[in-house]
Image (cartoon, rainbow, N blue to C red):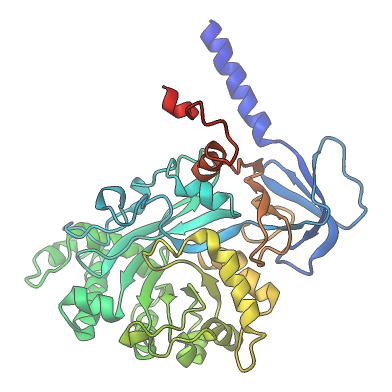
Length: 433
């Protein structure tokens, strides 16, 4: 009986926590749905935005207030693509699940089954204002890498906010290498894979199983059905302008396919064509190093030129490089603003730059209610010490789904443990066990 009573008490407490009412008062509220509200009040209840009130509006009774005077209040940052939760250490295969180099499966791989909510990078990233992360795999044995997901960065989130959110594949130099040595081989692999999936959608599975030139497993072909139906966007890693033109043919060949370009270092060279096709782009931005032949045309004005042409662009960290951390995305967006002030260069206005790390990725991945602040929107909120796109700014409060989040991380604990002036005659707490 005591256990039953305790369980009922705990069950009653959980909804009460979820229904906490918060009023973030006096900040500069960036809504992404209109002009910023100076000195505004943001009301949150039940995990949703209730209202954005003008300066001086009274706070209703029952709301706990967070003082944001002199601060900026924005939607949470959304990482357009990352490896958060799937790769603790990129240099160690035992702690890295983003790529399956020897697996017979490819498109059928589901990254959501390996996400580790206790990964140390999650609280570090959350403390910098990232509330949602798109998590993608990397190609292994074939150019199809598998299915990525959308991850809530909330403390204690045990499952993805959107599992199996997209399919990822590599074209260009990487795809050519994985397909046998040329882009022609890579293109043939892509078309063959989608054609085999088309046979599945047509209910001709028996015919498909008897095909002599079968190159896809049944599981992989079935996984690509969602791509043909448009319920899973197809993210294609591609950089060279001519490669982008080739990839843009896919929606015409397979009506219903939703295409998203990743990286697109030479996207500015074909920006009008990308815009006419209505295809969005996810890129790191500010990359002008021609480290590969397919990126000889890389420029720091790439994002600015694509946005000017009408392309929807979101920022992410597409490269498996530890230095490309999603927590730095506000700084990358800020660099896009600074780029616009360089003579002869093309950057973004502040609102457009912030959209690349908030509303744009939300729209690309159909994350309803995220990336904006308006009644009914998801209460993913960050209170910043100043302009979030400035290097010296930091997140002071992070709210995800209406719940205030801890900004504690392994790094902050280590900083306190080894702080200057600490009594060195006693071992740190964990060492005394």
